[in-house]
Image: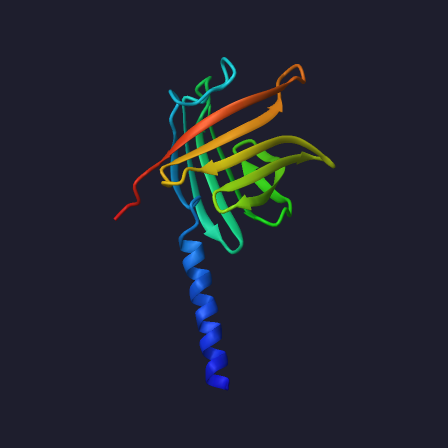
Amino acid sequence: MRRAGLMLIAAALSASIAACAADPFAGTWRLNVRKSKYIPGTCPRSMTIEMEVAGNGVRYASETTQADGRMTRARYTASYDGTEAIVMATAGLMAPVSLRRIDDRTVVASYMRGMQVIATSRQSVSKNGRLMTIVTVSPDQSGRSVTNIGVYERLPRPE
């Protein structure tokens, strides 16, 4: 009986590890500026996102060269259960993010200020795992809601 219990625990751990390894978001992604659609003057010159599995969520790090040439970085570790996580950036703390996994290849990120959502990003990975599309809805300078679409290509994993 005890042996059967240990085997069940081992099988559950193996399945959990395999699920983490198969997370379609894990990897390094580079923005394809030509395929992306941003409001004029806001498209970054370049952006690289690295994501790795962290428990029931993700460890996220990005490096961006903004349209005006400034280099920015952002980092966070967040669970997919909707709990707010602190986002550290080049300029200090940013709006906290909460993540919700919709299905195997889709995550919605909500950025909060106080008790109000100020921006949302819907992140989707293609069936073949080569492209990630991030559709972000946020207010512009005048407060109007705008949509930007970033198309990212998965970089090969280092050997």
